[in-house]
Image (cartoon, rainbow, N blue to C red):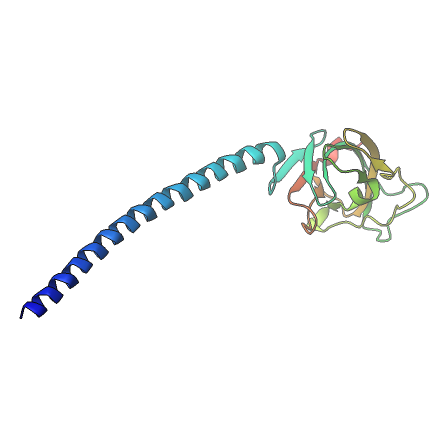
Length: 196
């Protein structure tokens, strides 16, 4: 009988010790949860700060003359459309579809990233005209002042982007429409009455 009493006492003692251990683990879990929450809060604050400075993931709508910052795999750069014109004919060329017209946009691009940019990589841009159709930018290659050459950090490059689009008001110039190599999208609205 004493043998069973001794075994019972040992089992009860083990259960008490195990119970205390679980309470300590519960406290540790709570502490760990607090640490994770604090890290998440810090991370969210840092992300908010970064979002203000580089605007990753943003989709902005800007107006003619306003500057937007693009974040791409090639680098980070600012784009400012300064003026645009709409015409049915450019240097003897007419749109392949007679219902379309040429939209030619003058832009300034400034390299604000660490890597050197190639002007050719900055031509992957879209324009949206009437019926929300994306315009072709292949018809005036070699006929406009294209973005050419390398742009070092802090340098600017002026050039033109040209599209064949259906008449619209406003037209839209869109960087980052197809987000394969960029992390944000910027649309500039170009009211027809502001064309040169």
